[in-house]
Image (cartoon, rainbow, N blue to C red; front, side):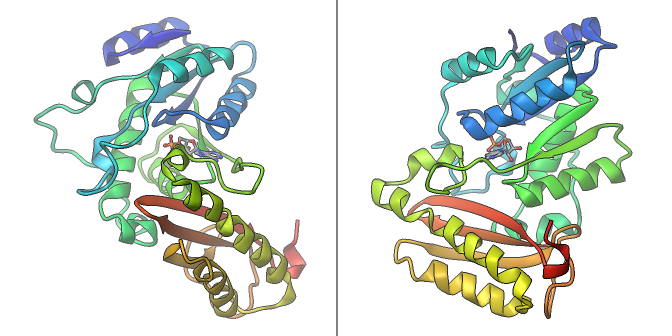
Length: 287
Ligand code: AMP
C-alpha cells in the first residue's frame, strides 16, 4: 500500500493507474470495523482491475468552535496496518496546510439541506464536509466513492453536491455496522466513559422499537414522542434531537407513514456526540 502526503504525489500515482477504475473511501481515521466494511465494499466495487484509495484527514473546517477537533482520536500507524490488511492500494493522509491554501476563499454549501437537523446543531459542519469532499473528489477524481449510512444526512448532502455540480462520480451508501450490543460503531465511542458506554446502546434499542412500531399505522409524531421518551428515560443521555423525515428527501413527514421514513437521533453523553438512524417502513412497504 502506498502512502501519500501531498496532492501532487497522489495525483501522479493515479495518472499512472488510470484508466483502471478508482474507488475512494474518505475517512477521518481511527478506523473501526464500520470503516473497514466500506473498504471491503470498495475492493469489491473496484474489481480485480480497479484501484482502491482511502483518505485519512481530520478536517478542521467541519468542526465548530468548542467541538472536539483537538481531542478527536488519531492513530495513523494502526490505521495504515488495518488498511494494508484490507488490500487497499493507497492511502492519502495529508496535513491541513497541504489541503487548505491560506488564501482560500471558495466554499461548497448545500443551501437548505446543510442547515437543518445536524446542520442546526452544528452550524457550518456540512459546509466543511461539502468543501472537503469536493476537494478530495477533485484531487483523486474517483469513479465511485463510498460513504456510510451512519452519517445519513452527510450522505444526502454528498449526493446533492454531486447532482448539483455535475460530478461524474457514483456515490455508494453502505450499511451501519454495530457493536454486539447495538451501538453504532464510531471513532468517538472510545471517548465515552464506561458508564456512558454502557448507556449508549439506548439509541439502538429505541430505533429497534420504532422499527417494529412503524408498520402499525402509528403517526410520525407519536412515533417521535415514543422514541424521545425512551431516550429520556436514560439519565446519562442528553437528547439533542429526534427527527422523523422522508427517507429519500429528508423533508418532514406528518400523519401515518405512507413512504419509508428515517428516524434520526443525536444524543450527547458527557462531551461525546453520538448519532444513529434507522430507515423504517409503513406496512405496505416493509421490504
Ligand atoms: P468518519 O471517519 O467518521 O468521517 O467516517 C468515515 C466514513 O465511514 C463515513 O462515510 C462514515 O459514514 C462511515 N462510517 C462511520 N461509522 C460507520 C459505521 N458504524 N458503519 C458504517 N459506516 C460508518
